[in-house]
Length: 232
Length: 362
Image 1 (spheres, each protein chain N blue to C red):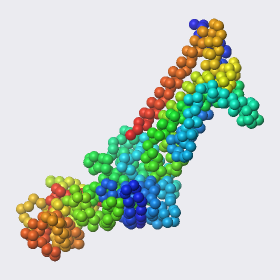
Image 2 (cartoon, helix red, strand yellow; image 1 turned 90 degrees about the horizontal axis):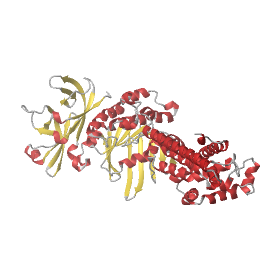
Image 3 (spheres, helix red, strand yellow; image 1 turned 135 degrees about the vertical axis):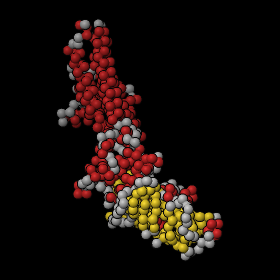
Image 4 (cartoon, rainbow over the protein chains, first blue to last red; image 1 turned 120 degrees about the vertical axis):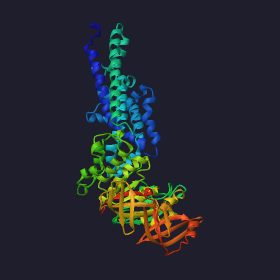
């Protein structure tokens, strides 16, 4: 079974992918909840424009998203140069991979959370209001807890998307071993060199395993949350 | 405590133009569905807006369109019991009950949450989730939750309407205890004569978005013109009587007041307690002398104080030692007995027809 043993390079890629996906999911979560709330509840001019922008990464070619990121956050780009003065650099770093993955997964996360917010019975919020809870408390104690299944689903979707993201990542941060070489990038590299088939196969199996674990975990979580508050 | 409400609002084709003042312990907003009663209490709680109006509770202004005062709903201190309970599905009964209490100002917080839990009989179900409760239990929890937020006023929007008859009878005694044992005034929306007669101290009658009558329960229920057409026979009198004794052999309770003596089936409270009876006008017969050999047990002596004829029907108002009892008979009987105002007669009430509720106030 020695063919199943991973090389240091492969371990690096697995570890980096998990790290990138974790941070992409975590950082986009608060923003995702906020945007989902605005889209679900807000009534303002330009709501459909905001909705369009959020969904862009879903419909644009990933390469285009990556290239736009490069134009915006590249070292020579105005915003990239400005952030670099504060020590925040995205291009050709793992943080850049996390940014690209977060943006690619953002529409999926927002959709899941938004649907869940729209399903919350607003009569319960009115009831909480009559009991003395101001709007902020209503959000924290009623709306968000009832949205939890959607939030969990959104996090899993974002994580899974980040684990598999390739196009935008490789365009924005390239494919530097140990730095920005994620699981999909390494699989791609293996398929480009002669004799890389076994490596590609090993990583593919790992990729499938991680996806399955994420899926099962989300099922279990969703069921547990759902059982606790089987709606009336 | 005085509650004063004025509201003027168009809702689509419907014009709501209602105004009333009440000092009652339990004021029923009574009227057919679609008469605007639910809108009135939703407006009072700040759940819907109105273009013009005023709401004040015990002198505290909650809404005044002239002075541009709009107190947000979470600061109104008005408890609301909805028709469908609206318990928070992600919280246990205990957490639901604690929710409003937590937001109440510390100095007003009901010190005795155990008292409320006992009053509503919730001790056994504190750790259950709402989806495992029966309809009646849910509604009791909803009442407790509203009460524990230490409101200055409790609004109830047809809290029994979604329950079957058995559940209704389960909850009514709790609402009676609420009325008699807590200091919080209640406004109770209902279209049921039976509920209102049993629970209300005062009634505000609404029709087509307007208040058409208001007064004490005794006064309003005698006016059959205010009752819904299909329930006109439900009009009648409300009597408060003291329990004298209970006959173990026949299971009959003897009640007494200045009106006279009345026997009702079943055991109600202990001797010395006051209970409230509803005597429907259609269940009262009139005799011009005391009758012997009659199955009806209750014969009350009185004088006719008014006769109101509506086609073949005559509503006769009988004055029994200062309390009015209504009788609905045919015009034909009225003629053959030669009934006239001032005439002394006997009102005969069939024992089995009486509706009784408890009144533990005195």
